[in-house]
Length: 293
Image (cartoon, rainbow, N blue to C red; front, side, top):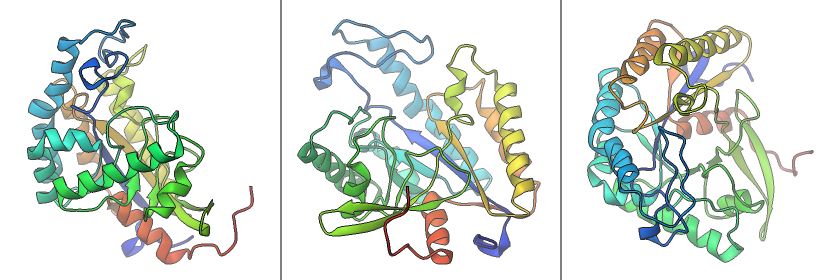
């Protein structure tokens, strides 16, 4: 797939900002238990509200979002905001900033909850509610989807039927590809725009957790290898961020230093995932037959 990125760029860089704050699990929302405490790795097993952790999530909206959005604006980077729809309903200022900054809103579900146990009707309703909500809060209908880790075997077919261009619950490659799924109307193709866990800022939480310098070093090394490979074949890189994680004062400069490193290189296309999916689809027409497995 030579030359599929604009201006023959070597590498398509996808900055993904997850917005989950306000849509997480809580007994106040009828969930069986509270969200785990990210920074401490504590998961309560009793149905009680964790007000402290709720405030930790709120930090992402109040303090983290301005820092992250400010850097994206300062460096002229268009990002994809994978948002749980309810989170944007409860933080309209973030939804407005996504729209004003020309960023792409992508669906991260209606709420930031697991959907793997949903039956067919509930899962389709979950998808549709997310689409309607995000279109209302941001002014743009989402055409991409990211689940909370797990989803049903039918989800990709539901997305194709509901008019989604791409799906990103996939970690199988460093470039997009087509998948053909069976729907009630017959086979339909959907672009798979792979995501990445190893470069995600969740690495700050895990034991042993990365320091900001370790995370930055890993992100830069990933970028450099893909940039080198991009001279021979198209490559894309995903950098996953969270408002309540990278938006902390002790971490935000690692993100800024990454952006500075990237902007010192020629042939890098910083793009939304929708742009990446469309560029791929333009140069690689959808297959007419179901893909071999």
